[in-house]
Amino acid sequence: MFIGHFGVGLGAKSIDKRISLGTLFFASQFIDLLWPILLLLGLESVKIEASNTTVTPLNFISYPISHSMFAVIIWGILFAVVYYLIKKNLRGSILLGVLVFSHWLLDFLTHRPDLQLFPWSDYKVGLGLWNSFTGTVIVEGLIFFAGVFIFYKVGKLQSKSKKIWFWSLVIFLAAIYVMNLFGPPPPSEEPIAYVGLTQWLLVAWAYWIDRSDKVLPMSSASSKA
Ligand SMILES: [Zn+2]
Image 1 (spheres, rainbow, N blue to C red):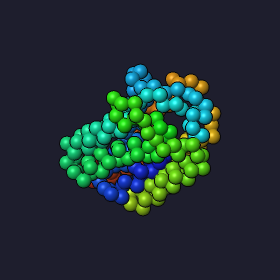
Image 2 (cartoon, helix red, strand yellow):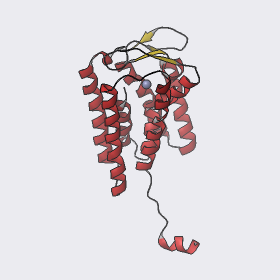
Image 3 (cartoon, rainbow, N blue to C red):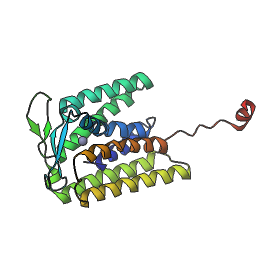
Image 4 (cartoon, rainbow, N blue to C red):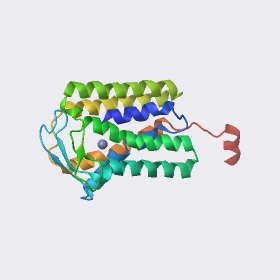
């Protein structure tokens, strides 16, 4: 799953509006942000295998640190604790912990049985929605567009600039998704990690969209000059 995770992040804005969209994306996509780093470190591995499932040409050989259920629960708790220590927002920190785990649930729905429950056990699960092209596009598309709709309703993007940044992100994510669905598989394994790392830019982009507008009043700005 790709844009579905962003859809969940967008929709979560309705539960706690104090949390920036950047932080919501950071949480809902956390384990996929971690994954390319672990690939580059050689701690996890992936192979290209045309038609591993109908939707993805990737065979996720091993990713216990980023994607085993147990590890994701731990990542969710850690994420929540760190956020709580920084912001002292209990409700928000619980929401973010749940968002981290939501990623695993959506991956459980889409992946073939390649997700370990525990890093130390080889028992793997996955409902395999990726075996159905139409099913994947419908489910993921619905989650994404519901998220876009909810965020647009509750996110209060007042300035024209924020709206432009927001809609360009939506179009950008949708375009990447379409390219993933219809484009050729990656030429080799290595670029997968580097392309994966660029997702951090999406988090930065979301922080930029949802930045606060506190501007110094003219008088205090000029008196300080
Ligand atoms: Zn994932």
